Image 1 (cartoon, rainbow, N blue to C red):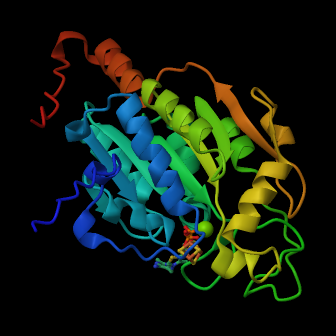
Image 2: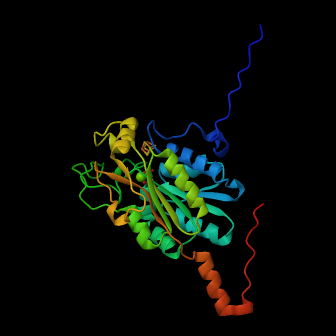
Image 3: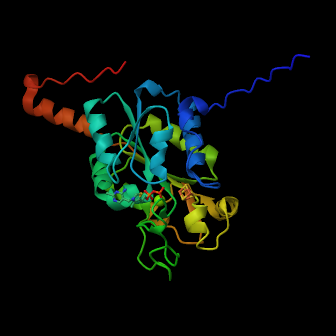
Length: 291
Ligand SMILES: Cc1ncc(C[n+]2csc(CCOP(=O)(O)OP(=O)(O)O)c2C)c(N)n1
Ligand code: SF4
Ligand SMILES: [Mg+2]
């Protein structure tokens, strides 16, 4: 008797992934893949033309996102995702340029690049997966690690004050700033969709569990326990002053959209200045049409 053929519907995220690279390296319970799922949802909902989308990552577990996604993807050197992405955007202003990277990559070695891109208001969409440590290299303290956390480099607990990322990027000039956790998949997708509609430096922080190197060392359970922790401890406060949203090891996590404002982006500022200075002598270069 002939066997009935079973048609397995394609997962809607699959179209955006390099399936030949699956299985991925991320541990069970890691939040990075969860954030990519929200990103895929945002691409569908915002009807993003992925032919004109470039995604740039630095190094680390979070930096693997570019390698697994099937766009024009660039896995760049540690801390250099932002300058690489800035170059892409300036050379081809029609591109939607997304930077998807980790807290260590963007705020430690790449911190200087990040604040200046925000100051200039370069039209980049930055997604920072914040697992509060350098995960891939063994769980060292990062500039985002809250106080009294055990890490491989602070076995008796951290004592140096951490950056409050939304406060930092707002002060530097970002036009859109939001924070969600890996538990808030729908809100995260919606924020990503909003980010695509924005012109200028936009920033989303995604708090994400690293059960292998952060939660385990701090006796905070596994990935599922962290989801429960996020659920219980998160408070949505859209419009909250970013000065009030700093994180601690086990305290409240303020999530929401904090900043949504308008400011001329770098491309407009450059264009206006050169037109004023050069008048008719200014010839704008034709941006690559990138068919
Ligand atoms: C120039 C340079 N310095 C240091 C490293 C080692 N390194 C690789 S990943 C990483 C930390 C990444 O941390 P983060 O961006 O938070 O990513 P995560 O692994 O936590 O997702 C470091 C320091 C490197 N690859 N290159
Ligand atoms: S080490 Fe941590 S951040 Fe890296 S894949 Fe595993 S759980 Fe995720
Ligand atoms: Mg990290």
